[in-house]
Length: 545
Image (cartoon, rainbow, N blue to C red):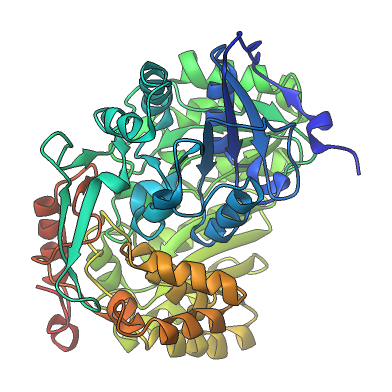
């Protein structure tokens, strides 16, 4: 099989490494087609590869460039929690000890970044020497510069020096204590006064956002050129990591950033992806549509990430149809106005129905909605209202294919709902929706409740989970493997109920208390209180306040 790297068209100029350049391996813990479709991975790789003082090789689970025999730095971009298995496998393939505590001065420094590690690195902390918290635009060059300053030093001095750089987290320099082996975290403290007590996520605030650095037919989205239109989301749904962790909401400058980036990329491909948590809320989105509707771009295939409901207009739908897109995706979460108020989803059923009408009028053939069960404060009637909303959409836009993807609420760090656990009744609620919706011709697509539980385990986990993750991988990385690992480690860490289903109290020490996100804990607690004030009497007593 020919190397996938041969099909790449680079949109940047890699540097020729200087004599004595630092040998670096930058890995994505999944297949090449998945990794090369990650805009974050592309940007970090291009930033590193554009430096003369580095010699960078890429590594995927199924492909690699020629690798240095003695890399000084080995980095990972982690976008999905369960890819940790592949991180461990790749470290083994490089003959690097899995745990940072087992590495010596002769081993590579293992660093990592990406949304998973920025949100809560603690379950993976024992596997990394260095973790970069926040936006690569700020962190990467600072990290490399700091490393160059102490390149010839011993490992401990290197780590202590790197710990002084804002946004760089060195897990081994922090001691975690527990109330008991199988209960909550008691404290997280630096090992001495020279190490900062808290590490603050670094936030890039410029108006030039990311765009693809490579186009290839081997990507999961063949030959796609991706442009980041916005970063974060102004809506701030109280469960949403993509909003809270990446605040504030930033937009790319249309004239200085977006249009030049689009023009550059479309010289090499006819497929364009507009990325962001809330793309259509760019203040000049209408002007962007007008630009893409010029005759010169009639041949371009256009994809847009999930859009805000009240921005779905016939013009938007017509533009998508013109550019070979037949569906649009909207996150509605629920058909219950009360529940949407609890989660701060500023949306009404009338707006959702109008979006469906506009989608059909503009020529779209499919409307994809995303919802959630097990949301804090949810009651059985909220599910009935979701069913009625979907029925009303079908009546209002007959002939429009309707699909409803539904997940289970998973608590995420740095959000107001981080204190809530997963509700076990969510599994039956998914089954209830399936029973009610599929006979009505609605394409119901539930996500696995069992894997949502595992996602919650990792999203709320502390360092003790590293033992569990290693055992789970050893036993085959299946749902049964997690159960077997918990059984073997009984008494050495809390049980699944604590990590996944328990509601935690705002006063307790969270595994990520030493890591500062965009908003302080006191602000998150205020947002939590605003939500729980709207709970019904039957659920109010369950709130963690």
